Length: 255
Image (cartoon, rainbow, N blue to C red; front, side):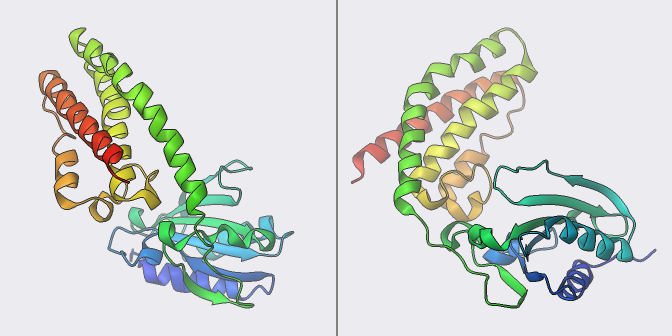
């Protein structure tokens, strides 16, 4: 059985979607929008449709994919989604598992959902009947306000809750200690690093650290990611908290 290439899937999607006049545009986002496509990149598909054709778009999408390969697994997010547009994930049996389709169906009235260039890049347009695809201006003031609020929360909670990690280690609860370490120690550290070095994407978590943090900061975080045992996890936690305090101090000293 031959394996479908990612490009073959994309070509079929572009051709099939363009046949429907009520499908106004189709785009590729994610790695395609940021110029960072590699062999592992999935197919981040945006489908812009007339407002009353969302469900029809999912039918057309599925028909195109089934014509290429049996569907191995499919998951539709419940509506309303957190971002407002309907979304489905589809993995084809005859394609690389990395090349699953992440399709978001966007109504004409929500066409500004393609996102800000500073945060999401510029979508690669497969077709656009009316020139509707566009990035939206970044509302830097609103983003900064959210960042300041989150920073204040971290000031109040980061150090306070570190004993949850220490307590789990002391009790010999390794799985619990790992959970708290990732979610309370590393996550907060990464957030403040982003706030200082990449404020436009301060809320992107652990994704894209290779492009968003200075190399030495990224290496420092990665060095804390794989403790060998509970004892080393406890030591890494101390190092992470020290880094957190340093970054907070640096943020406070900057204009």
